[in-house]
Image (cartoon, rainbow, N blue to C red; front, side):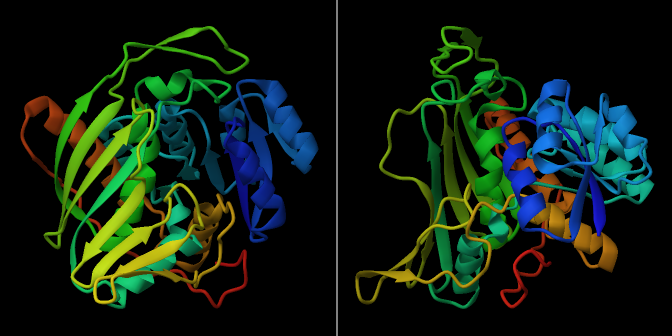
Length: 365
């Protein structure tokens, strides 16, 4: 049983709170903290959390807490994670690891210096959909991988999100917000990335919020919102990726992996489930494959549970900084490439960890 303290009780915290109480019995949430105290109070009451702290420093000082769960806004991840590491706590953070590469480098160095575990989201790649795709690719269903294409395109968050401003600031945008799901899925399917080429732009300088409670307010856009990237993997495979908050509609979504025997349609990497379909090049027919792994519902907290078990057992975690930093470097290098007009060679190297074990009971890692 590992004890967790949650910092940040915003929109994403709800599913974590649910899964703490109903799914992952090897974790115990012992404390919550938020800059808006009312949020923390509601979480404490609804989920019987033992402790509520006014400041994150008070939470970090609690000797009962083993792991800090950082659910703050993207541009706050660095400061919260750094303070928690300095206080001697393991940290699991929502994505991204940091708002830029320098932040990620500093956090990784600090975790190594302190001998602490540093990991983070997304953990959707551990769900039944992506894990089934990994098994099919590794088993040779699609033949030799030739390449791929992935698309995450919509017209932004201001029409539905209650507090959408941060999506258009440093650490936000479609690449840093949604890119981690796609890149993490890709590297767990195909292995590490060695170089990237990128192109970025902003379709709009401002955004009008149409969702309550900020309806009618104007957001100034301070980050690219339409990004094309070209990823070259260690294997030599190339994948093109579009992430955009500027597109009203597109017929292509999610991830397609092209092989010598056909095309694999990978389900939405923002989810844990989805339909796995293979277009068989020999029969010219689309074939749906059953999901072979657990965690097909919204299982956020799965990566945290895996990291906690890794701390206890000494085995490598599936969601360590080796993965989150590699993803951060990919995204930062897309921006760097767009600025310089040249490809960027990555300094980090990624090796896939073991696939999920479908024989284990749900909630046990």
